[in-house]
Image (cartoon, rainbow, N blue to C red; front, side, top):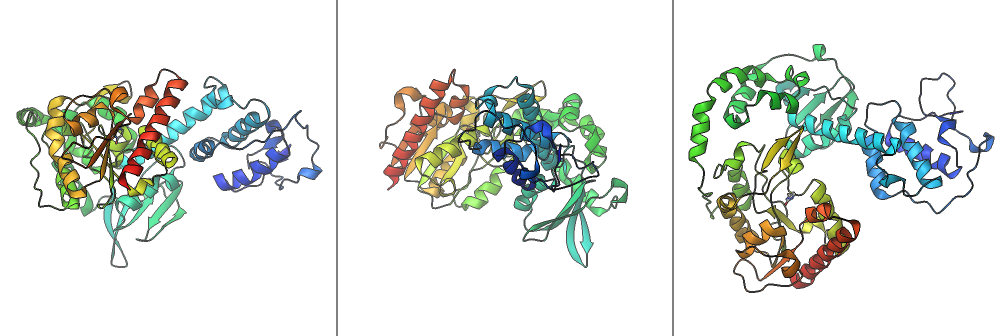
Length: 462
Ligand code: URA
C-alpha cells in the first residue's frame, strides 16, 4: 500500500495522481489519507504493482478537471481516493465512464460536487458583514459556517462584489482576508471567539427592512432556502416576526403595481441605468427575485447578445449567463472565435421568474406584460451600446427584438437588416434549447447552428 504524502489540495493531489496514473497504480494500492503514521513520498520504481493490460493515449477531459476541483472542496475524507478511482477507471477500464450516472463512483462524485456548489451559493447569500476597525482602518468582518471546505472558491465572489472595502471572512476551518488587492488565507475561528453584536447589526437591519419582500414570507420555504443553522449569524432574523405581521398591506401595494412598464431616463449613463434598474418594480417579478440582473460587457461592444431572463444562478450572483446555459454560451463563443469579454450580454427580462419545486426554484417563461414592463431597460441598453449586431437567443429575446414571435428553426442563421434597433439582427437557438434537446444528435446540431450564427455575427460586425 502506498501512503501518499501530499498537501490536501487539488494541485498537490493532481501532481501525485498524474504519476500514479502513468505507472498504472490501481486505486486500492494507494492510501490518500494522512492519518497513518508512516508517511513517505511515492517512488514508482520501488513498488510491486499490477500493470493493466493496455494503456491508451489518455487525456483528462478539461471539464473533468474543473469538476474534480469542485470535488476537492468536499468535506469527505474519501474524495481524493474517489477522484483517483474515477481517473484510473476512465483511463484503464472504460473511457465512457463519465456518462454512466448510475455508476456508484460517478454518482457519489456528482452528489458531492452538487453539494459543494450549493454550499458556495449559500455562502454568497448568507454571509453578513459587521463594520469594524483595525488600526483605524475600516474593515468588514463576518463569520460563517460552511458545510464543505469552500473558503477559497467561495470568497472570490466577495472580492468582486465588495472589492472597494477591506473584509475578512472567518469560518471554523479557515479565514479569508481581502486587502483591496488580493485575498490571503489564514486560520479559522470558532463562533464564540468571533466578536459579537456591534453597530453594524443595526445598519444591516435597516437595510434588510428596505429590501424585505412580503411575497416571500413562506416560513417553510425560508427554512429550506435559509437553513436555521445559519440564522444565528444573521442579525435580520430577529426582524422577521414584525415584518410578517405587516405583510398584507405591503402585498396589496405590490398588486397595484402590475401592468406598468419601467420608466427609464435615457440621459443617464449605462452604469447609472444599471443602478436605477436595481430598484425596478415595474412588474411583480421583482418580488420573488433576489436582484435585478442587468447586462454586462464593454460599452463600446459591437456585438450584443440578448437572452431571455436570468436563471437561478444569475439571480443569486447578479450577472447574466453564468449558470448552465451560460456555460454553453461560453463554449459556443469560443468555438466561434469570439471573446466573451468583448461582447455585451443581457436579457429581455431582468428578473428571475420561478416557482418552488421540491428544494429547487423552477424557471418559468416570462409573460407578455412582464416582457413589456422590462422592455425600456433593454431599449436603453441598446441605445447606450449602439451595437452593430444584436444576436437574440430564443423566442423571448427574439420577440423582444423583432416585435413578433418567430420560429427559431425558420428564422435563425439570417441577417435581418430592416430593424431600427441595430443595423444587423440575428436570431439563434437559446443555449437551454440544447440542454432540453431530446437526444445528443439534436443537441450537437443545435450547438453547431448556434456557433454558425455567432460566426455570422462576427463576420457581420467586421
Ligand atoms: N438564460 C438566459 O436567457 N439568460 C441568462 O442570463 C441565463 C439563462
